[in-house]
Image (cartoon, rainbow, N blue to C red; front, side, top):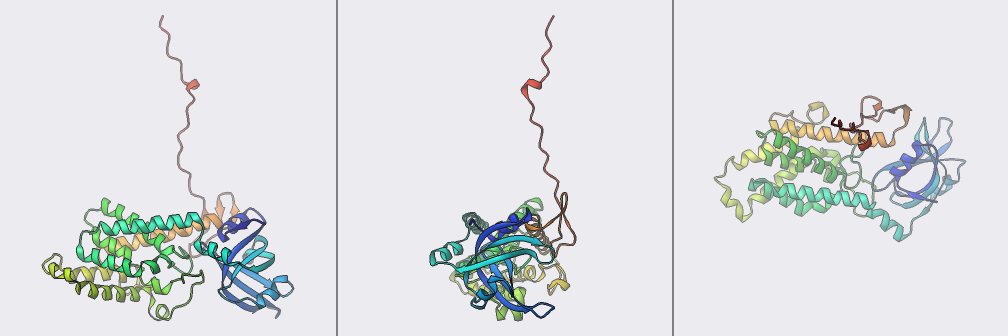
Length: 357
């Protein structure tokens, strides 16, 4: 039986039924009841890229196996996968077994293409940080990457919707960094150093709110994340690192730099506080500076484009070039217009040059 990733199974199921095996980790395991009072199990399986929900009904062979499962178990699930109108991706007649240690280690490493992409994205973040001219912001970013780089590289950008996978935060920040650098070139009035720092730190609180362990894909709930949220945690983190920065010997040479260090700190904190754009979306303040508005739009744009890309890849077709709506996007997806490709001219089609009399 061919072993596919969860993402590959979702893609394959769009074209009909897919018989395959998938390796993943149990993120959640809940026993429920139907409207008729019949018990069933709902299992959330996660790998490096995506998640899927499995259901084991009381008359299915997997029902008894679920009694022995626990969250964080590593499994191979074999079955028939198809799209169902009621439940989305539906696994039928599925069975499972525990992964061997070698299989688990291979799963934790992630697909080679994803590992390569995330490594390149982290290198781009480091390169962008190194280009910062303001020594205060440069020093702050370097302390962050040195102390929290490993945690950063395994955090997700969200629990759902976009970049909801281990390493997803690095992908999100790197793509935002590319967009922010392009914007800073197009709008020279923007403070490039501040914008780079804002992109790096805007979701830094998610290192606690959306952190994944080094040995799994199951995202635990964190009390600090629940009580404070990532914006508040990020502000606290920046202030903590700022105090550490000012205690360094080189900080004595920054006393006369302009803009003043306190102004730099406050403007960076504003970018974190305002990046959701509206009070109703969790920001304690709305954007009030050019850099804050730029950061908000870059963040929102990358999230929306990631949702669209995932939706095109995995949502159910409704008609030619129309696919099912993907929450929280507001409507059904319509295939984007293909890029223009100039016709390839055949040398034989060229008009023959006139012949002289």
